[in-house]
Image 1 (cartoon, rainbow, N blue to C red):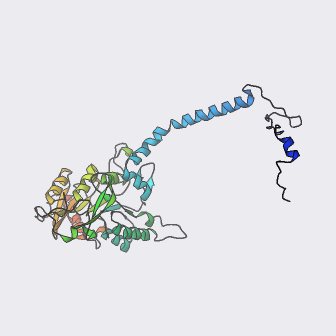
Image 2 (cartoon, rainbow, N blue to C red):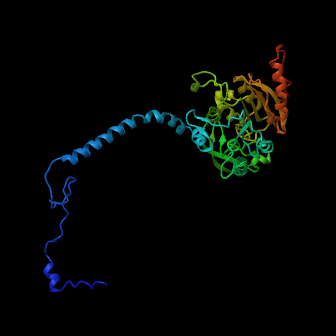
Image 3 (cartoon, rainbow, N blue to C red):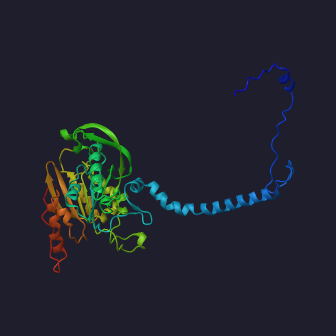
Length: 380
């Protein structure tokens, strides 16, 4: 039943005005108080047993907090290196990482790694999709949205092969990886020049002397730039000397790494961005401008500069092959002993190069050791 409104002018209400409210704050309840005795409001000063107990608890918590904080710098030293590197941060988002070693955890069947920089449609991924090779893992890098959407879809479909009741196949789901980023000489965020044709887009700006329609600038986008110096150490490769193995050669990991770069003029920047870690690669393929030709992009890779740089790292120039107005350049690590994975000899674009290496390596390491470099197409 609703109560009637209070009449402030009634004699009863006026008689209460100015009086102190009879309601008092409840007295403090001591934890040792006997519920059968009346409550008393104890306002005596002093710490008491409750206060002393609270002090001991807080002191204990402070002590344990300081003990834990002393461990943070040691734990954080590993984490900080990841935070300071864009590649390490992205790796922990995109790849199955081993926190103990800082390496990518690949299935035990994987013996070979293919790195496709400037992947676009990726001939290597297509062959992996067709062959279901269980010994090869592929890492694709491409910053362009037009390429990335398709690559991401294909990698996802490949990774979902063999899925059963929401459980991914442990091999297929850890065999192909796509990273939406460019590779260059240094990490960072920069503008990427979109050309009239996606195949001619580049980190480099259009050259003032360019007269090739494909490389004509059609806008810019912002992209993430990573480096091979950040990525290659994440691969656990057999035979590589690492601090994690006490300065000794690693006895586990993948056996071979094969690198292909096609970044529309920025290929030499990608090589320089690998620094000494490039020696982890067994074969290297790049695309460069012919010497003396009009450039498509400002500061783009030219043949003589690329050859000179790779000479400083000890790589053996295998072949320089013309491709329209550009050239493809092939190198082999001086200590590479093969054999080339069968996967790379099966209908990939550069299968002739991969197939020919085995014969060269066999002659190089024969008892007679009487071998010579193959004939090199003279273009520079």
